[in-house]
Image (cartoon, rainbow, N blue to C red; front, side, top):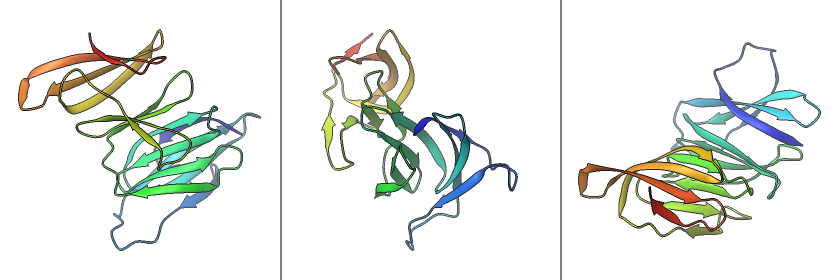
Length: 171
C-alpha cells in the first residue's frame, strides 16, 4: 500500500522500478512528471505521468492517491498503484489532503473537496471572491491559504480552512 508520494526530478534509468501513466490524446503536452511512491514496507518505485507536475496527495481514508499535472488529474488505487480514474485538462493549480484524509483542490477561483470519486466534488464557500489561490501548509488541523480578492488584486488575503468543518475564514 502506498503511504507516501512526492514529486521528484527524472530519476536515473534503473534507479527505481517505473510505471508509465499515459492517456492517449492529441491534446497531450510533451511534459512529464515523476512521482516517487513509498509503500508501507518501505519499498520505493516511480510513476511517470503525462504533464508538468503540480502536486500529489495520498489519502488513507479513500485508499487513493491523486496526482495533479498540467494535463491530467490522475486517481490511483493506493493498494496496487492501478489507475482508477482521471480528469483531462484540469484547471486545478493546487492539491492537498486534510489530516482526516479528504482531498482538497483549488483552481484559480474556487476550492473543492474531492470525495470517493473524481466526479463527487463539493464546492467550499468562501468569505470573499478569490483569485490566484495558493495552498501553504497544515497547522493544528488548519490549512493556510493565500489569495487575492477577485477584481481587487491589490488586496492580498490570508485565509484558513478548518480541517474538521471545512469552513474558510479570513485570518
